[in-house]
Figure 1 (spheres, helix red, strand yellow):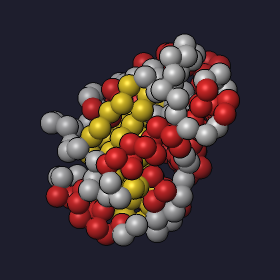
Figure 2 (cartoon, one colour):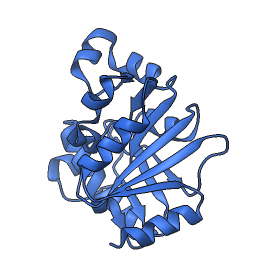
Figure 3 (cartoon, one colour):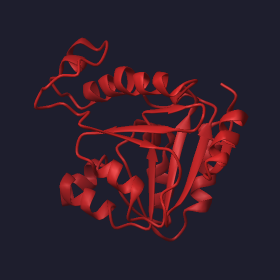
Length: 203
């Protein structure tokens, strides 16, 4: 995938965009940009692989429901509430088309809600493995690659987690893909920046 073409398409959609060859370079950039403020993360394997929580926690107040120590002290629901009140929010995507449309799937809604309202700035970290040529391919990826792998990670008993092969569009009470959000241009009144990384991260 030509990230320069993707960058141009995102900029045409009025997103701020930065490209990096490695996750380490992207993490260093975010560590420099996000300073002495409050920040929260959506549930993300990519951000964990980047070591972003450890970096930003040195000089920011960071809330993340994927941190066992914070969960033990506050509880996962309270952490999601705290995350909604931060100045900055960092998310990844489950799929993105080369023309710049970003797809996210959520089970509790906290990540989707935070990417569209309530924060002064939102960063999307998008690695090369999440980008597909067409919107239809990106949606297929989100449903059939990202969602089953996340279901497995969360140890839910949905067909996609048990069989680890595809989406079954199930009605399981443990289904994690309950809402889909497509972001086409930045939300009104919210600064939004996309960080493109020319490496594979997460699911």
